[in-house]
Image (tube, rainbow, N blue to C red; front, side, top):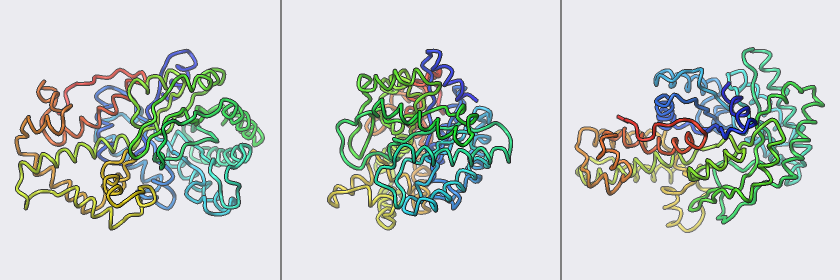
Length: 431
């Protein structure tokens, strides 16, 4: 598996990384397959325990459903399945953290078993959260023991189904998914002594359960490299603050997995990979790029289409979000005016949960239909999609709605491909 090549390359001094796409958004995934296929690159796609679990998650898909969904899309886009790796992110008791520990862990065991049996190869075992009855921050030894317990479940599931064995990602200091809820100017990296202790107690917990072979397949430790994002801010990577962590991982046969690398610059991503943070998790930045592009297309639509025929996409989207606030209300704080702009423009991009809604899909399809057979004036492209405007002017991009949105997403992906050491054809023909 090519993830093993990433680890071997890092240990040989080669700054090689792996972008990890944490999204279930069909548009983003389809574009990712196209961009990676163009460049001859592999893809790592992950689903979280919130998105996909034994009860369907918020996508309505169980692990086998998601595997079938991704593989079918890969075949439709001509992407070789041998270059695809599926990962399970935050697999553990997170979804059931309000329950007593034993009950939550039993649910987590069912979850991990289902993921491995479905064919996921990269398994992030996350037991870092407090469960009902736990102290606010469980001791590293408790987290390690729970992690090893789930690793034993994964190993048993693999023996039952056969095939290549899973590789594991572990950790005790796991940044929460989806970005920060409070403004932060700086985020301290994981302390070196804490990362070292985590590795030691994890290794010991695996060995106590006779999981030495599984420990040999632990490819990454999740740490906080000192990056974060929230509604209106991005904390950039500062290599000097993570220098101790970078030195520590050189002495272990694995790499770091860096969560919340969304919105980092290409240069920051390259520095992360160089410093051993080889697995770069990205999710909201991809759906943010999609949202930004379709909102720009709606702005163009207002100048080309009479009011009665327009999509009114943003209005429909906001109506649906207000009718079903469960995915944003606990995250977007402030006055009604502040919440209104966050629903549309926040870096946390919780609007991503609402694209599958039928009314939103109907408005989106109308937007594309309204613009598909119209000439999109260059001044409007320059105003609302300036990066794509230059590509259109240079003949590298078709001035069609689908191509314009695809280009916006590909530009984000290219930052990750380039930072990870893969050859990219940024600016190639996208029609």
